[in-house]
Amino acid sequence: MALAALKEQVDAFGPTAYLVTVGPEARPHVVAVRVGWDGASLVVGAGRTTTANVGPRPEVTLVWPAPPGRGYSLLVDGAAALRDGGDPALAVEPRKAVLHRTPEGDPAEPSCITVLPRS
Image (tube, rainbow, N blue to C red):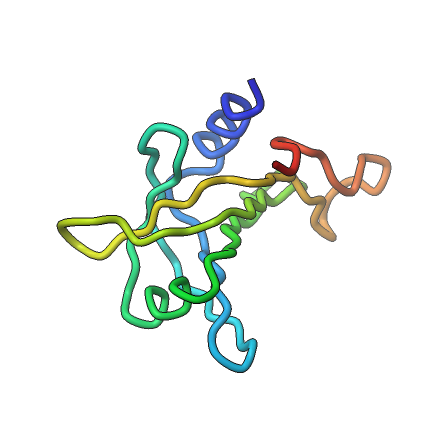
């Protein structure tokens, strides 16, 4: 049921997100990616640096900024693995997802809404 809620949110926010990985020396690496689904995994393209980062550090975050007129961004934490075949791509197994209120959001609303509880 929670995965269905996440799929609804990803559909609502659209196919473009930012992928955050961590490189050597704990430096963040952020790239824009197109996101799709393959079963229970999110699939994103992966360049050279992203692929190198995920090998030893598979924990990633996908970020969908709040669309105009909405007060929440979508954040998905997951474990990424390189997919076999074709163009370089990652399969991201979602481990936790939240809607996080932006500064433009209504302060009377919750600051964080769980979409997918931590697994």
